[in-house]
Image 1 (tube, rainbow, N blue to C red):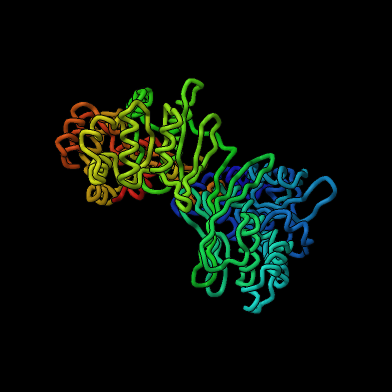
Image 2 (cartoon, rainbow, N blue to C red; image 1 turned 135 degrees about the vertical axis):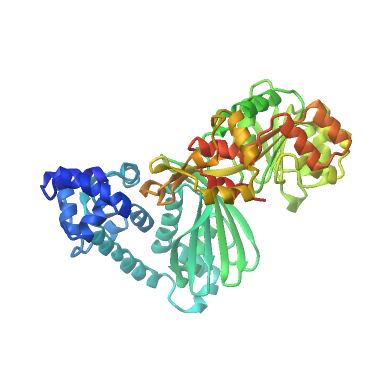
Length: 575
């Protein structure tokens, strides 16, 4: 959708409406929840074509009607279909030095820059109308259908092709192009995972972006064998193995990015399902400041990582950013005068000057075995990817007791629940009390897109619903104590924020993610409670008394500051 400013200026310049009429219209449209563009077209003040031609003239851009233009296939595919659909832009002509791009949004500078780099050519931007663009978009399906017909033929027998046939299939240009498009678009969309799922009639492709899975495209069933074979070849896996799970990895390196893909393939009812985890190798490790901790928890974390020995645990469900937090801590500790060793499953980021080992249970190299070996390597700091069993827990705690700083993760819902979990694993209470320095529980919340952020107040019904899920008086008290609100405010008169949805965030209203944290310091009084095997409720009471912010409280502070939404906090913190 065109920007309101461009439309207003174009309409005034063309004398379609006077400035008084535009002002009056905008007031009227607020209540009707219509944009100026929608109103002008709906009320037939101007046609869509004329409106976009007016804006093109105002912006000194050429206008192009794509309805009767047949785009050459090699030019069309210069912009992959997913990018064309998501950003409403399409390549329709090119010469030796430049590519002509038709778009409905001349302000999408980020995508233009991305295309210039990937095509290594200058872009000539043309404006087109949404209906003209939708018409041109159909040409992708015509050309892809023609390509798909060549891929495998429709016979089911081709699915179980011999290894030689699969090798040939994986090297076919259309298959290569489909896989390249899937991977390139996933990188461009900042996806963390790609899911390729066979169904009875088609192949479904989904991306996980900012922690949420969403459908991206469906492919015909007969591309399945070629797609799987291509990814197996990239990952150096067995082409003719269809009955057992396989794991591999490969890397894509360009001037702009360096991304590793961790590949997992498992047999399912309709074929083989592929999940690829994207790991940005060129991405910088976050600093402690960038993690998003509040002032007091940040000081507690800094104080505890400076201790020479003891244990720091980070807890939360899979995909809550625990590894990122540990790497940020190791980045601070990574100085020439210490030896840092890790045992991980898998190694997600490479870090200079840190000795990283990957477990391999298939050959007997487990967390416990690897940890024993690391202790003979004269380490100062040890990072254990995860404490999964009693043996690993006991070795880690003994290492912390004998002068090492041990960093690790655990799967528990909150910080306080970690202590009973260790005791349940059979670790002696005096060892837990004397070695644990700090426990950090965390979740990742989606950040509001700053391009379409808008404020609102909670309705009485919203507050009533919140009261059923939260202790509102305690929350208000914490927000007041932390200086986020003044003493006389209540939930009904607080301003919160959300994203309306725009092109930059794919109409989601969110872009990027940030952590919310619960930082529980094991003080002398808490250690005494652990020795006496206190219940979770008693430990939680002690934690709150010493000023610990809960996940929800930290989340609401961030929601109040316009970083995330109330809905996001409730989504990630519900038990």
